Image 1 (tube, rainbow, N blue to C red):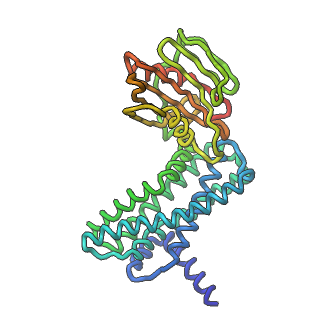
Image 2 (tube, helix red, strand yellow):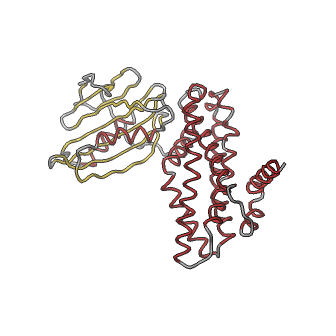
Image 3 (cartoon, rainbow, N blue to C red):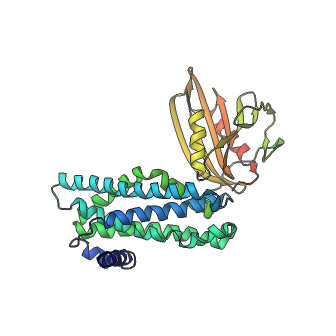
Length: 360
């Protein structure tokens, strides 16, 4: 009976934190929630991971049923990581308050953070339909509704953190604590935030700008799974090297269509990073820039990076997209270019002609 009573209390408090955030925040300073906050963080992490994984798979046209094991394992580990991350963030915030000689216990801060995450329990509600009908993601109205749902829940979590922190701290300190929470949380959960960001882009591509560049005019090359156009002076020198779908050369640059095998649950940024790390090996004085763009229905990670190799400047522009569970990238490399901007512009002119079967 006691266990049932505790479970009922826990359920009621979670519902109250979601539906009546102002009332919950007002009572936060005088209530003791103990381990309830840990359970909220665990279940919120599980819900977030399940929803994100199903969306990632559906955006690639893959059925969630085929990946039950990785999905459940990922959900468990994210739940644990979210609970630990909340503890770390609360601890950092409590240290800042202690240095400022201000009130605010670790227990209160942890509860404020974890119960603010409770809206994440609602993430899977519309997404559950994709388990039985993954093609539903292709319906524009449904995809837009899911994107709005995710953004609304994110806004609700941030609002909950602000309300809860303000309920236990004076205004000025609440602002400091809120900033500490945001920065620390971003550092701890950067990978999951990035995955959710790319899922949102896949659901609502209009959030991403078009790649603006004049299309290259010249010979069009058609290979298995993709096609592109190259300016005059380029030739096909495909060698069949592992990881290369095709290779082209001009007098001043090379262009490789690279394949990156990876996990089905990875998003375009993960593939882009794995390819880029390989390309940057051995470069000194490295610099990097990244944007996300779209072209020809593709969601593309646009990386620009370079450095020097044996004293010679190297400029690389890499465009990465996803086809099924495989990452595919155009890697344009110029050695000692006379005009760096011109080299980067030529890469963009080729990329806007790139079409990939099964990507988007």
